Length: 265
Image 1 (cartoon, rainbow, N blue to C red):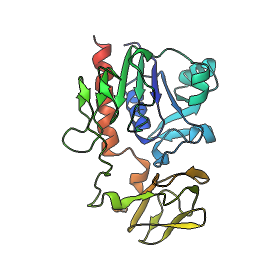
Image 2 (image 1 turned 90 degrees about the horizontal axis):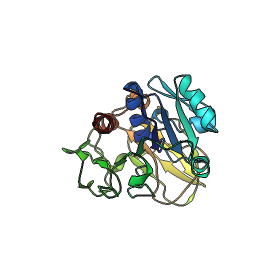
Image 3 (image 1 turned 60 degrees about the horizontal axis):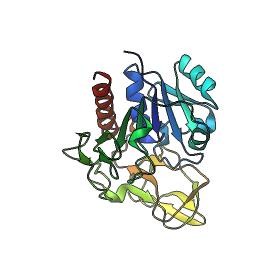
């Protein structure tokens, strides 16, 4: 099979898991796009840090930034995923994708249309198959996680994080006010309940429970009240901070199936 040209919108945890799965299935022409100041929390399993550092690796797969189509093709030739700033992509589209995957997980459609690629796949709430995308992937934890929806919409956003070791909403760190976040801890650090994880302005952000910092937004990020800025894993195993989660693997597997359905038509 000739590798399709794939554009993934987003380079956070879920988008990166999707890109990783497709790459490992020998689809080697993948480009991910993200904001200049990404809001990813699980940065150790995301490709977006490559925009700042020049390289990001997720479970052995690397992404490198590109400034133009020639640079992207060079990155592909070297065996990497390409990553491009969303603004740059919009100003000068690099290619018309065979497959476009909206993996931003904004809980709403921020502009994805079915005419933007031969096959358009969208993840989660805010999308309806047959209207916004050819196929929609269910992202809500539970019996239907990873279901490929051919007609209709994904389940609406519940606003409740998935449970890990019996903890759901309480394991998530959210900004208590608008401001600039400064980290006091690193992803993978062990913390006790009440220990300071960071600050927003001069306001402390305490750990809500004992565990390991599984995700944390980067220092100097401008945040708004209510924004997810981190999460604590009560299982306490730092190795989980550096590998793709069960949820992300399920969603990525569904996207791979969806791409192959179209390719084999």
